Picture 1 (tube, one colour):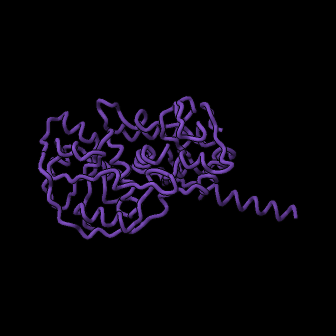
Picture 2 (tube, helix red, strand yellow):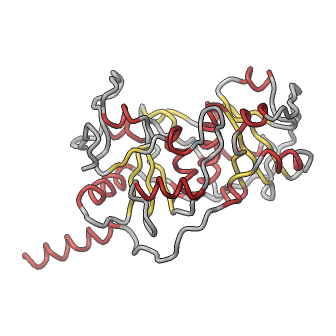
Picture 3 (spheres, one colour):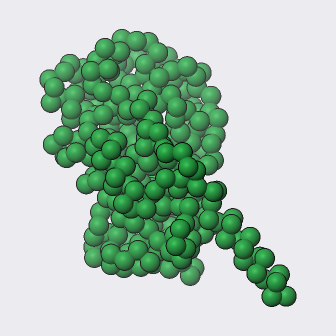
Length: 311
């Protein structure tokens, strides 16, 4: 009996610890980020689809990049089982992106509100639909475009529906049971094959900030804090991504060393999408916990840690 229990425990550890760590250093996926110079030269390319992601269409109407289409955040997410910002059904997403004029051979460039945070959520959705290798963020977004005094438009772009065809990639989603295992591994093993990253502000990670909508405050055991805005961007005034070298140093310091799979989460799955984007950009294998902390604290027996301690 003892031998059987030992074998079962060993099998469990192998299952949740993840695949063997690769000796190959992650390679930056440079195609995931385009510059304002590149986009200015390609605005009239019919194969390049530019999309502004935002909360309010009035901001788009006030001035957007020429030929850009508008994608409202509320079309990208739904509330499911009281969890906000969940992925909608695939058929609805297929219609949504096809109606934006995306074809299967299109090159999609995203920018949006809140220093490209909402654009990152759109990227995550496209990656879930198997289109991530044909999508990119505009580095610096609308802020950088305006700062460079580039052309803006107030015209509503007429769109002909495209033939967008989803090829769903479920591996980008970390469901709650998987996150339970990842949490246990990162909190208890000396050399886990995962890095669990909390993308929220530090006062939410530590539990110092009050939030009456949450049953508990703090973070998931094993998670390390990388607040997306402070750590991923140069500054609010210059919201481009830091260099790959700077970003890699930050993520490695948080435990995302060579060969590890990154799992990101936040409060409801929006801030974590920026961390998801950056981790993938850096070459990591990555998934996002879409239910995030708001779901975690509703799970029976799910542990929570307060303060800066990881374990």
